[in-house]
Length: 116
Length: 111
Image 1 (cartoon, rainbow over the protein chains, first blue to last red):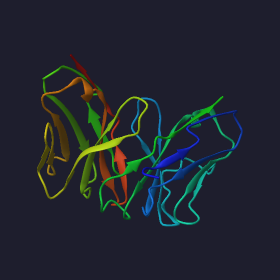
Image 2 (spheres, chains in turn cyan, green):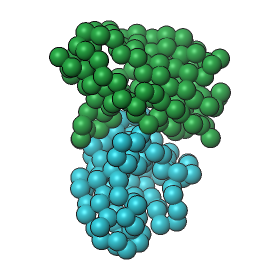
Image 3 (cartoon, chains in turn red, yellow):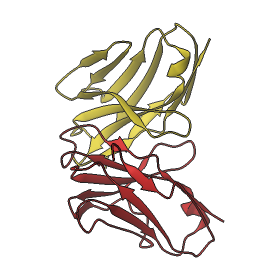
Protein backbone atom coordinates (compact mmCIF):
# COMPACT_ATOMS: atom_id res chain seq x y z
CA UNK A 1 0.00 0.00 0.00
CA UNK A 2 0.90 3.65 -0.27
CA UNK A 3 0.95 4.39 3.42
CA UNK A 4 1.21 2.88 6.88
CA UNK A 5 -1.78 0.66 7.52
CA UNK A 6 -3.10 -0.14 11.00
CA UNK A 7 -5.79 -2.59 12.03
CA UNK A 8 -8.20 -2.56 13.66
CA UNK A 9 -9.09 1.12 13.46
CA UNK A 10 -11.22 0.73 16.56
CA UNK A 11 -11.10 -1.89 19.29
CA UNK A 12 -13.40 -2.06 22.29
CA UNK A 13 -12.55 -4.65 24.90
CA UNK A 14 -13.25 -5.47 28.50
CA UNK A 15 -10.85 -5.01 31.36
CA UNK A 16 -8.56 -8.01 31.71
CA UNK A 17 -8.76 -9.10 28.07
CA UNK A 18 -5.87 -9.54 25.63
CA UNK A 19 -5.60 -7.39 22.50
CA UNK A 20 -3.39 -7.29 19.44
CA UNK A 21 -2.90 -4.26 17.25
CA UNK A 22 -1.32 -4.65 13.82
CA UNK A 23 0.85 -2.30 11.80
CA UNK A 24 1.84 -2.72 8.17
CA UNK A 25 4.56 -0.14 7.37
CA UNK A 26 5.42 1.39 4.05
CA UNK A 27 7.16 -1.20 1.90
CA UNK A 28 10.93 -1.04 2.28
CA UNK A 29 10.91 1.03 5.45
CA UNK A 30 13.35 -0.52 7.92
CA UNK A 31 12.43 1.52 10.97
CA UNK A 32 9.09 1.07 12.74
CA UNK A 33 7.80 2.91 15.78
CA UNK A 34 4.85 2.51 18.09
CA UNK A 35 3.48 5.57 19.87
CA UNK A 36 0.51 6.01 22.18
CA UNK A 37 -1.57 9.17 22.13
CA UNK A 38 -4.06 10.03 24.85
CA UNK A 39 -6.71 12.67 24.29
CA UNK A 40 -5.22 16.14 24.24
CA UNK A 41 -1.65 14.88 24.47
CA UNK A 42 1.25 14.41 22.12
CA UNK A 43 2.33 11.00 20.89
CA UNK A 44 4.24 9.11 23.58
CA UNK A 45 7.04 6.78 22.45
CA UNK A 46 6.59 3.07 23.19
CA UNK A 47 9.05 1.03 21.12
CA UNK A 48 11.31 1.26 18.07
CA UNK A 49 12.22 -1.58 15.71
CA UNK A 50 15.21 -1.55 13.43
CA UNK A 51 14.54 -4.46 11.14
CA UNK A 52 13.35 -7.42 13.21
CA UNK A 53 14.86 -6.37 16.52
CA UNK A 54 13.57 -3.96 19.12
CA UNK A 55 16.33 -1.36 19.28
CA UNK A 56 14.63 0.63 22.01
CA UNK A 57 11.70 -0.56 24.12
CA UNK A 58 12.19 1.95 26.91
CA UNK A 59 8.74 3.46 26.41
CA UNK A 60 6.73 0.31 27.10
CA UNK A 61 4.88 1.14 30.33
CA UNK A 62 5.09 -2.32 31.92
CA UNK A 63 5.42 -6.00 31.14
CA UNK A 64 1.81 -6.26 29.97
CA UNK A 65 2.94 -4.59 26.77
CA UNK A 66 4.94 -6.45 24.15
CA UNK A 67 5.62 -5.96 20.45
CA UNK A 68 7.09 -8.11 17.71
CA UNK A 69 8.22 -7.68 14.13
CA UNK A 70 9.30 -11.20 13.16
CA UNK A 71 10.06 -10.64 9.47
CA UNK A 72 11.09 -7.03 9.58
CA UNK A 73 7.87 -5.75 8.06
CA UNK A 74 4.51 -6.13 9.83
CA UNK A 75 4.52 -5.47 13.55
CA UNK A 76 2.05 -6.46 16.26
CA UNK A 77 1.60 -4.66 19.56
CA UNK A 78 0.25 -7.01 22.21
CA UNK A 79 -1.38 -5.92 25.43
CA UNK A 80 -2.19 -8.46 28.12
CA UNK A 81 -4.69 -8.05 30.96
CA UNK A 82 -5.89 -4.72 29.62
CA UNK A 83 -6.73 -1.94 32.06
CA UNK A 84 -8.95 1.11 31.60
CA UNK A 85 -5.84 3.29 31.64
CA UNK A 86 -4.66 1.58 28.45
CA UNK A 87 -7.43 3.32 26.52
CA UNK A 88 -5.78 5.54 23.93
CA UNK A 89 -4.95 5.90 20.26
CA UNK A 90 -2.05 3.65 19.32
CA UNK A 91 -0.08 5.08 16.42
CA UNK A 92 2.42 3.23 14.28
CA UNK A 93 5.01 5.06 12.18
CA UNK A 94 7.69 3.96 9.77
CA UNK A 95 10.81 5.55 8.35
CA UNK A 96 12.98 4.58 5.42
CA UNK A 97 16.28 4.28 7.27
CA UNK A 98 17.20 3.43 10.85
CA UNK A 99 17.25 6.15 13.44
CA UNK A 100 16.31 9.67 12.40
CA UNK A 101 18.70 9.92 9.46
CA UNK A 102 16.00 10.43 6.88
CA UNK A 103 13.92 12.58 9.16
CA UNK A 104 10.30 12.00 8.35
CA UNK A 105 8.16 9.55 10.24
CA UNK A 106 5.11 8.40 8.28
CA UNK A 107 2.24 7.72 10.65
CA UNK A 108 -0.69 5.39 10.24
CA UNK A 109 -4.26 6.42 11.05
CA UNK A 110 -3.99 4.66 14.39
CA UNK A 111 -5.90 2.04 16.34
CA UNK A 112 -8.23 3.49 18.93
CA UNK A 113 -8.39 1.16 21.94
CA UNK A 114 -11.17 1.49 24.49
CA UNK A 115 -11.06 -0.67 27.60
CA UNK A 116 -14.39 -0.84 29.42
CA UNK B 1 16.11 11.56 28.51
CA UNK B 2 14.72 14.26 26.30
CA UNK B 3 11.90 16.49 27.53
CA UNK B 4 10.02 18.77 25.15
CA UNK B 5 7.77 21.56 26.36
CA UNK B 6 5.38 23.38 24.05
CA UNK B 7 3.28 26.50 24.41
CA UNK B 8 0.73 27.86 24.09
CA UNK B 9 -1.66 24.96 24.44
CA UNK B 10 -4.30 26.87 22.47
CA UNK B 11 -3.99 29.75 20.04
CA UNK B 12 -6.80 31.65 18.38
CA UNK B 13 -6.07 34.07 15.53
CA UNK B 14 -7.98 35.87 12.83
CA UNK B 15 -7.53 34.81 9.25
CA UNK B 16 -4.54 36.59 7.77
CA UNK B 17 -2.76 37.04 11.10
CA UNK B 18 0.50 35.30 12.02
CA UNK B 19 0.77 32.47 14.53
CA UNK B 20 3.82 31.50 16.55
CA UNK B 21 4.26 28.29 18.55
CA UNK B 22 7.29 27.78 20.77
CA UNK B 23 9.06 24.70 22.08
CA UNK B 24 11.98 24.05 24.38
CA UNK B 25 14.01 20.87 24.68
CA UNK B 26 16.39 19.54 27.30
CA UNK B 27 18.88 17.29 25.52
CA UNK B 28 21.72 19.31 24.03
CA UNK B 29 22.58 16.31 21.80
CA UNK B 30 19.25 16.57 19.95
CA UNK B 31 19.90 17.30 16.29
CA UNK B 32 16.55 17.10 14.49
CA UNK B 33 13.40 19.11 15.16
CA UNK B 34 10.26 18.38 13.13
CA UNK B 35 6.79 19.89 13.34
CA UNK B 36 3.71 17.78 12.73
CA UNK B 37 0.16 18.89 11.98
CA UNK B 38 -2.73 16.72 13.13
CA UNK B 39 -6.24 17.46 11.96
CA UNK B 40 -9.15 16.12 13.96
CA UNK B 41 -9.29 12.34 13.70
CA UNK B 42 -6.36 12.21 11.30
CA UNK B 43 -2.78 11.04 11.47
CA UNK B 44 0.07 13.44 12.33
CA UNK B 45 1.76 14.71 9.18
CA UNK B 46 5.14 16.39 8.85
CA UNK B 47 4.91 20.01 7.74
CA UNK B 48 8.46 21.24 8.23
CA UNK B 49 11.66 20.20 9.96
CA UNK B 50 15.05 21.62 10.79
CA UNK B 51 18.41 20.12 11.65
CA UNK B 52 20.79 21.46 14.24
CA UNK B 53 23.27 22.84 11.70
CA UNK B 54 20.68 25.32 10.42
CA UNK B 55 19.17 28.30 12.23
CA UNK B 56 16.11 28.90 10.09
CA UNK B 57 14.12 27.17 7.37
CA UNK B 58 11.19 28.46 5.38
CA UNK B 59 8.58 26.81 3.18
CA UNK B 60 6.03 29.21 1.73
CA UNK B 61 3.89 30.44 4.65
CA UNK B 62 5.60 28.38 7.34
CA UNK B 63 9.02 28.78 8.87
CA UNK B 64 10.94 27.26 11.73
CA UNK B 65 13.73 28.86 13.75
CA UNK B 66 16.18 27.11 16.03
CA UNK B 67 18.29 28.52 18.84
CA UNK B 68 20.65 25.76 19.94
CA UNK B 69 22.22 27.81 22.70
CA UNK B 70 18.90 28.45 24.36
CA UNK B 71 17.53 25.04 23.32
CA UNK B 72 14.35 26.34 21.85
CA UNK B 73 12.71 26.31 18.43
CA UNK B 74 9.61 27.95 17.04
CA UNK B 75 7.05 27.50 14.27
CA UNK B 76 5.86 30.60 12.44
CA UNK B 77 2.79 30.58 10.21
CA UNK B 78 2.07 33.76 8.25
CA UNK B 79 -1.15 34.78 6.49
CA UNK B 80 -3.09 32.12 8.36
CA UNK B 81 -6.07 30.49 6.68
CA UNK B 82 -9.00 28.54 8.18
CA UNK B 83 -7.51 25.29 6.83
CA UNK B 84 -4.48 25.89 9.07
CA UNK B 85 -6.75 25.06 12.03
CA UNK B 86 -5.39 21.87 13.62
CA UNK B 87 -3.21 20.64 16.46
CA UNK B 88 0.50 21.23 15.93
CA UNK B 89 3.18 19.16 17.64
CA UNK B 90 6.85 19.90 17.91
CA UNK B 91 9.35 17.11 18.48
CA UNK B 92 13.03 16.57 19.12
CA UNK B 93 15.27 13.57 18.74
CA UNK B 94 16.32 11.56 21.75
CA UNK B 95 19.29 9.24 21.53
CA UNK B 96 19.36 9.73 17.76
CA UNK B 97 16.74 7.02 17.34
CA UNK B 98 13.37 8.33 18.36
CA UNK B 99 11.28 11.47 18.55
CA UNK B 100 9.92 12.95 21.74
CA UNK B 101 6.84 15.08 21.13
CA UNK B 102 5.50 18.16 22.82
CA UNK B 103 1.99 18.28 24.23
CA UNK B 104 0.54 20.09 21.23
CA UNK B 105 -0.95 23.46 20.35
CA UNK B 106 -4.52 23.73 19.15
CA UNK B 107 -4.61 26.48 16.52
CA UNK B 108 -7.95 27.98 15.58
CA UNK B 109 -8.07 30.37 12.65
CA UNK B 110 -11.31 32.31 12.46
CA UNK B 111 -12.55 33.65 9.12
